[in-house]
Image (cartoon, rainbow, N blue to C red; front, side, top):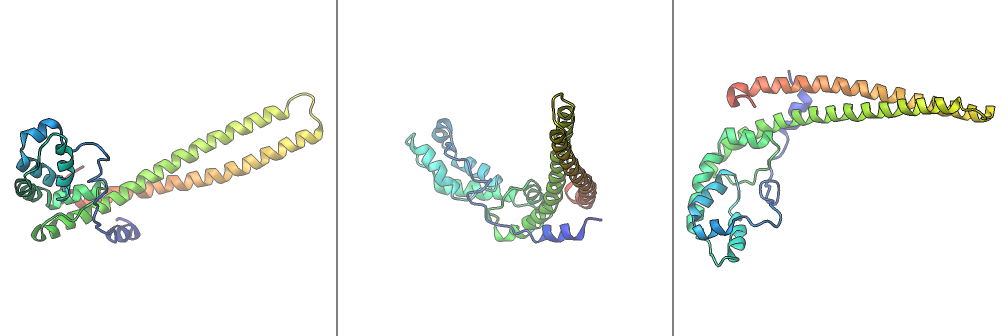
Length: 221
């Protein structure tokens, strides 16, 4: 069963407005090409943006892009298309996918659809939380493993240094002390590495649990 602390923390994650976040940020790039602007399919563009969960402010971005080509958006047609697109976006399944992938939610769903969307979104956040924990644990194991290799190389180098000709006993003693220090650091690092391996085991179990928990409702991913 999934760790209660992880489950509780994931359920406490807020569903925040993400204007300016991953859903909306495209930097300084034009949001529409010259061909799209001149085609004037504002209903279709609104539908596409609605399907992606974008806010109405997206039309301002399109207006700036199309102003270069002397085209003014049809706001009414865009809004109608966007409302239709949101009908396909504001579902539990799309909410789950947004939460699972760590995407933001910009609060765009109509009142009558928002409860279902946010239900799926919170479920997706639970999955995202445990999958992120697994990714972090694996990264930690890799990082600590690399450090162990580095320390082993340092020990070998110092041992070779201690065997060099022409050193005084005092110099050899200093090298031996340094080797001892490196060995202590290596022992600490290995303990951390083993703990990180255990964290991977726990995280993998949590991922299996949530996949089992949600597979009937949302399918596999």
